[in-house]
Amino acid sequence: MAEHTFRFGVVAAPQQGGPWRDLARKVEELGYDTLLMPDGLQLPSVSSSLAIAAEVTTRLRVGTFVMASPLRHPRMIAYEADSLSMLTGDRFELGIGTGAPHVLRQVTEELGYPEPSGARRLALVGEAIDTLRASQSERRTPVLMAASGPKALAVAGAKADTVTLAARPLASREDVATMADTVRAAAGGRDLELAMNIFVVGEQVPPMVEQFVGASAEELIAHDSLAMLRGSTPEIADELQRRRDAFGTSYITVNAAALDHLAPVVERLRGR
Image 1 (cartoon, helix red, strand yellow):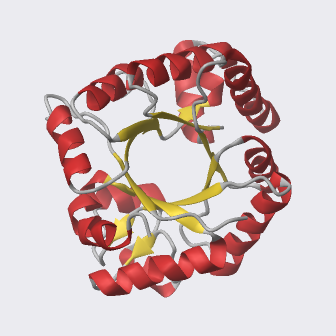
Image 2 (cartoon, one colour):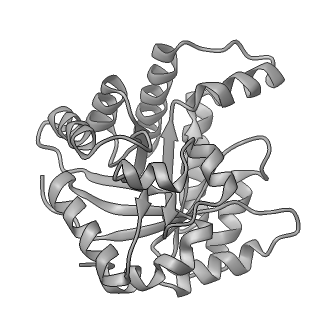
């Protein structure tokens, strides 16, 4: 698998009355490559939000991070992805995954949907990707798949263009290397981009992030967590290059709270 150049994305969502357009412009001005948005009923429409973000920028790519496959019919996912590709001038990337079980349980109950099994959720991801590919003749929307278990990693390696190695926050480097090997084996020589999502930049963990990852700063540091980046700009840049050498991860995404902190690293590494 060929080594990919670095690119960087920011994961964010519009806040009530917040300056979404200004955020999109800032993400582009700081040199990031993508603005990515979670998908959920507690947030504004992901399609509308990403279309607006693309409209107020010129080169910035936009994407979902990620659509939960059980919440939409595969044909509807393909329809939205193709529509966003057209409306953004082919700057849209479809991020898709099986969804976190506890979140899905809440949403499916609210919508009155049956909660699908893990196997069915994974099958729905594959169906959505296949449906998108079959529906497109004039364009090809890039697909990112977030995956953690061996079965999901195998599907991602076989079908996606980019695979986010969704490791547990306290996973070891050996664990992540095994995940990357599983994806490569499933790809069968097909070239893939590997990605990693960073939750913390620096040594302070915001309370919401600590609650989400289920670990304190001290625990993350003690476990050499790959969900965290620490140190000076050169030190972080060196660490990301070590990770690319070890795992092949060249696409780095961070939450919006860290976008200013990581910006000097983006300037140093983007496109290298």
